[in-house]
Length: 235
Picture 1 (spheres, rainbow, N blue to C red):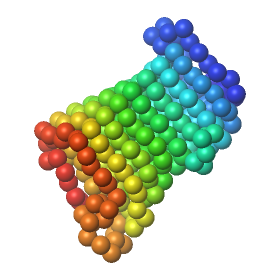
Picture 2 (picture 1 turned 45 degrees about the vertical axis):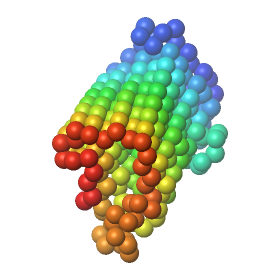
Picture 3 (picture 1 turned 90 degrees about the horizontal axis):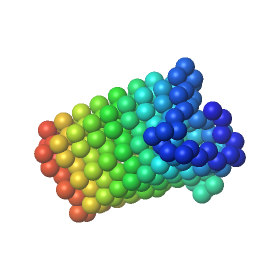
Picture 4 (picture 1 turned 90 degrees about the vertical axis):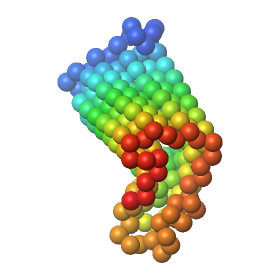
């Protein structure tokens, strides 16, 4: 279903269902400023895609059983007119990632990201925004994975648990710093590390890896426990 400057509102997310079986996209946001609420989208290749010239506000929706990613959010500018907002919704049982987002402003709030085949939320470099109040659990790779380079993001008040690798993975590919605030989250019972700082810079860093992480990542008030590989890993 193509969304173009049209708001789409269902009666109830459990009763209004878009079955997109056999379609590439359940909902395609293309060059639009649109709101979608109160419905379920299921069984598309990708259940929702937001292109670079769109602002999408998704509230009280369910996305499930996609063949590939649950939601894909293309690279865009940092303008508010292209912000991606996902609130009080869920993305579950995707064939790959739950949410796969590239450079732009984002907000993911009070939602459930569960039982996806790869990462729950996969954030590429240079994102801006907030991820707060979510339950991110039982994904087959990290609950959240992100690239450090240029990222400025706050993770606050999330429960990240039971994921099959890390709760949170932060990847470093070069010397470009980010600003990542991690506060008041519960990160527990993940199969590997609670937080893994993953190094792929091939010797480009001119400071010690842990010192670089301290410059970019601020931790406060988190509960991190019971993770299979330990609460923190630097690799």
